[in-house]
Image (cartoon, rainbow, N blue to C red; front, side, top):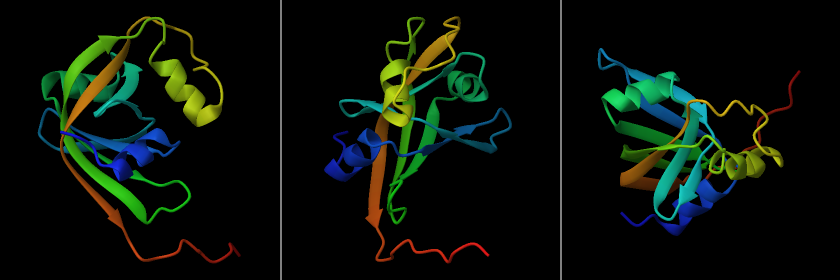
Length: 139
């Protein structure tokens, strides 16, 4: 599927995504992640022993939600599946994503078991709600 320009903009920015995977009993598990993009596919780097890696090895179906860091009423909801598990021992995929979010290469340099989950999008839905993010000051 070809991603919309709005979805590409959210993926290319330093916007956090929430990745939902399925547990062995079918219940959902959600975790905030950094996300990158290769064309119309989403890249999520992790350790091979992480829960998200184990869940997607068993069932590749995933869902992601991403909101704009500066305008949380600009959002995309995505459904897709992990179509590739690419080893990343040299952190060649992880480092550019880390730089996008932190300005620095990924600090945890243990390369054993690093993997990039490559997600092919089956469905996306971008929404821009007509609100301004102006929460009251903390008291």
